[in-house]
Each structure stands twice: as structure tokens, then as C-alpha cells.
Image (cartoon, helix red, strand yellow):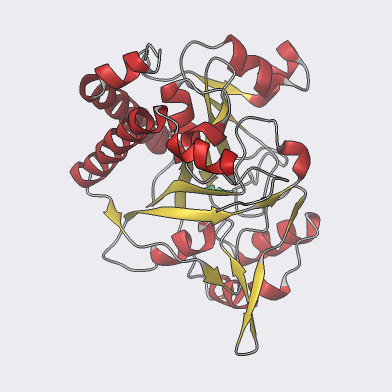
Length: 306
Ligand code: ASN
């Protein structure tokens, strides 16, 4: 308990939280100026993002209904755009992902974190890249102007990203750096960059003409800070969604209602992504482990004190 109290009292939190506050203000302002509306996040739902990697489920039962804690709001982002009057939406979305304890020292995993989760209707990944590039540039500019003193106290020199951010294909980097290409590319980079085409969850669109090519992407922070954002153009056709769920051995049962919506041809054509807030603050403040940017750390495998 004493260690947890010392952690809360660590002097650097005031500077880190000033940086975080400025970054959040910049993001909200950018959304508002670009007419992206904000909706409130949900925490419990019958179906959440299945996530295509090893982790534990977090469920509660309420009046006989089994509900999942949100792993990401991907499904709700798609459904919210069923509204004809809304074509751009975002959520400040808390996620619970009970990750394996072996990720404890990755420096970038928390099993509770917040992502700014964005989704646009009838837009392409190119449109989304431009939007995110602009959001990062605006946020970095605002933070470096507002928080010069705090960044100095934290020993961080924040470099302005050069736009447009570079876009790489995953195959291209794999050929150059081998299977750990994400890590190596992040270590070598000076600015954030995009990588496209990863085999991931059922909802990221696969090219019909080019099987095995996915219209999805990540943004990576430079200096070895790793993944910042992930997203993609989405599947909207029922049969494609079911085929991909089967290929990934995703249990379709919790998705019955979602699949009914898809079978009526109602899932809108969307593109989007989510940017991890704590990861961004870790990068901006140059902290070694993500635990340092939160007062109440939830590090995989570690006991929760408060
Ligand atoms: N937010 C991500 C997306 O929009 C999904 C995720 O976090 N797993 O694709």
C-alpha cells in the first residue's frame, strides 16, 4: 500500500496530467472543428470486440443476461452510424482487456485504458489518414505551446511530426526487418508512421479481388514506443462477416443480433480507428513504462491496490 501511495504522490504526475489535459483539449477542439460529434461510451453489452489474441474475458451477469465489459466499441461505432444525420462520431471509450501477465513489462499495456475511438461513414482509409495526421499535428502543436514548462521539467523535447505521415505496407517492412518489423520500425523512426494490411479481427475489410489483403492499419509512435492507433475500413456485408468470423473461430452466438442487422443490409460502410490515450501521453512525456502516466495503474498480472 505504501508503494501505491508514493506512486500517487510522485511529483511528475502534475506535469504529466497537464500534458494529458492539453492533449485532450486539442483532440476535442479538432473534433469539434471538423464536425465530428461526441457520444458517451458504453461499458456493458451482450457482444464486444472479440480481439484476436490471447486474453481473459470480463463478464458480469445482470438479471440473467450475460454482459461483456467493453474491449472496444467497434460494433457500437458501426451501429451509431445507422443514424442518417450522423456521419462522423467519436467516443472517449474506456476499455477493459484482461491481458496475459507476460505483457507486464512491455511498457505499453494496461488492462484498463481509454481510447479515442473514431468512425466515419462513406469515407476511405485515405480520408482517415489525412484526418488523423491533422489531429496529431494539431495536438502536438498545442501541447508543445501550452506545456513548454511541463515538458522541460519532464526532460522531454517534443518533435513536431512532418506531414503527411509515411505509410508503409506490412509486407515491405517484414521483408526489410523480419517478423519483429513493428518493433524495429518503431525504434528506427523519428516521426509517427502508418503501417497497412494486418490479418486481424473479422470487422476489418478484406479486399474481395485480393484475398488476404486487409484495408486496415496502425499508427506507430517512433523511438520504440510502439503501437499508437489501430483501425480499418470495415466489412458491411453479412456473408463476408460470417465467413471471416468462421475463419477466426469467433463464437457467432453473442453476435446474433449484430448479424441480423447485417443480414438486412443495414451495416453502414465505415472507416475508423482508436488512439490509445495513455500510450500517447507516455510518448509525449517520454516515460519508460505506461504505469508512470496513470495514478491507478492496471498493469497485466499485477495486483490492483486502489
Ligand atoms: N478501436 C479499434 C478500431 O477502431 C479496434 C480496437 O481497439 N480493437 O478498429
